[in-house]
Amino acid sequence: MKFSNFLFPASMDPAQDEQIINETLREAQLCDQLGMEMLWLAEHHFDGICAYVDPVSFAAAIAASTKQIHIGFAVAQMSLHHPIRMAEQTSMIDNLSHGRLIVGLGRGTAYNIYDYQGYGIDPDEAQERLLEAEEIMIKAWTTENFEHKGKYWDIKLPMLRPRPYTKPHPPILRACSGEESMLGMAREGRPFMMNIQSNEVTRHRMDLYRDTMRESGCDEATVQRNVDDSWVWRNIFVADTDAEAKRLALPAFETQNEFRARMRKKVYAEQGLILKQETAPAARSKVQHGIVAGSPETVAEAIAEIDDIGVGGLILTFRIGPMPYDVTENSIRLFMEKVAPEFKTKMAA
Image (tube, rainbow, N blue to C red; front, side, top):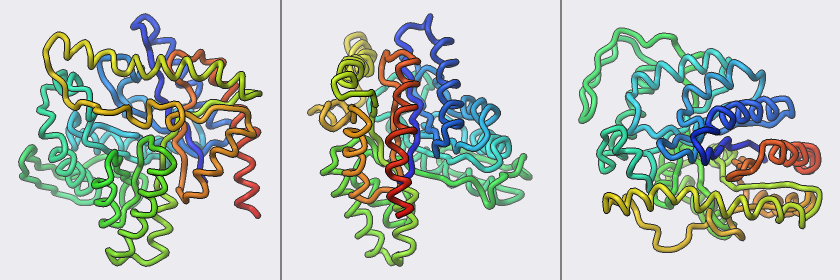
């Protein structure tokens, strides 16, 4: 199993933006030094949920200040990006990082209508824009004298420069919040990213994902390769003892959940607009499903349960809500020194 850090830092006060952004860059460099496999970057606007806001520009900063860690988007909201500009930017980062970039794409937020309002985009167009943009980016990376006439873009260019470092282009990964979108990736024989779910739902979806690939004609080598390249998300916190982990992590987790809903509630109160109503608490907001917290031994046991499901990698959010940087750093160090080696030993055996 591969391990990664989802850099998803909240800045609950605009006056803290610079501090949080710089601390997040330090967090990325720490993970690189400790030998973690991946970093993932989010995209959210106007509310402080993700302090650095733009995964593309932040990925360039990380690429220039790290040596070996891979960098991925989880995800870039493609309805808010011009596909040619995105193809150029990601090709540049692919060159800067010498092939360490994974281009994770998604339709955009399912809840924050103000993301779309701020960019003047109709949220009902988001899925179509994603599909058209992905097609354009692949063709721009791989062909010359490219022309495209679609529903949203009318494009003509001689050649996209710089050409990607990775041939034929950087890997593309799609985020799938629902079961149906996951099945679409399975039918296409593609890996995917799963949002926070209970272990029960994670197992069900991974079994369904494998079975659907087989039914679609994929051989076992292809099925295993796509499973190895798929990722599932959990919040995580490691401390010396279970009691200390709960004392430090659970209040931060509860504050994080409330903060992420605050702007939605404000917009609804002021405008009467809501993009999607959560009819029941999502798995990500429930302590028993949304966060793994404890001593190294407790965390290793919890991760072993996920490993038993059969997933390629874990997307782990270490910095939770208002958690101070030094507390986060200690959690990361404990994980990499006392938890991750347990699974490397298992793989070697």
